Length: 205
Image 1: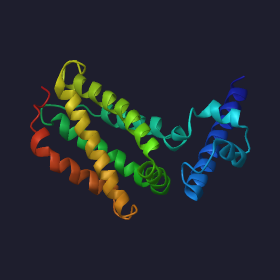
Image 2: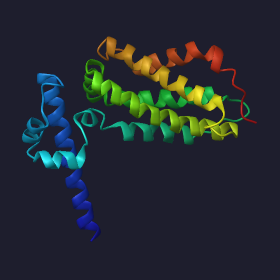
Image 3: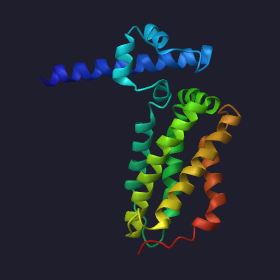
Image 4: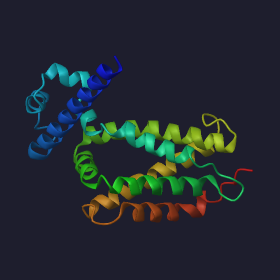
């Protein structure tokens, strides 16, 4: 039974990846608006109905790696807790640098997706909508560090928003030279530029 479940899971993952690759290829060839779901399904050798079993929209195909990327950030943040010598901002900086370094190993795939996001208003809007869930997740963690409720205390929300803004700015800067530079360098500079303000958030004692 377990082997059957594992085979089914691997088949689903192969289908998901085939849809993503077919979609990204067509978006690059024809532009996001120029590629239809029927065409994506045909290239992935599936039915349009099957497409909707995996993705609710074309936008979500471009952003299909969001859950995994959020999990990396949460894992990086929860694996290290601020102490009396470190402020939450310092720990956030370290965690986002680690994630940025991880992104380097997927440079070409990420560039493909980010360039589509940058060029397509509907995907950019969906991207911002999903990033709101990132801010909520990061704010909740910062709230735990500070011993406060992130839904009532402004500080966790503000710090989380600033950290994600630093990441967004870093990615835009990285994209501007086609990913030839190092993303962690952009992240470090962005966090350093903000540190004068948020670096003074009290350390957790």
